[in-house]
Image (cartoon, rainbow, N blue to C red; front, side):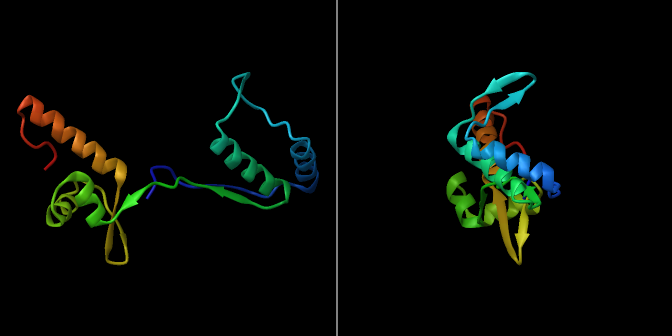
Length: 131
């Protein structure tokens, strides 16, 4: 379950792949955005280098988001509510749900946003938003 569709880059032509492979073997990788050089955190650098290495080998590559999804039991524990209430929230569309077979999967982000909204509503005495 991702907000953004995966993006597939076709394999590079032989000349472009060879040029990229040479640049990667030099070990100096700099990322520029709007003319400004940025140093990526190690995890991001490794992901970018992996993508570039695949393209340099002449492979096509797909980039997609990997979102943290929870089972009903995990969502219930995180939100501090019952399993049946989690199912009710997904049935009402309060929490978007993805089915894997007959099993529901809920994004951690949706649960945390709902919990924050519940806490905010409780502080202002407005009841339960979205339920």
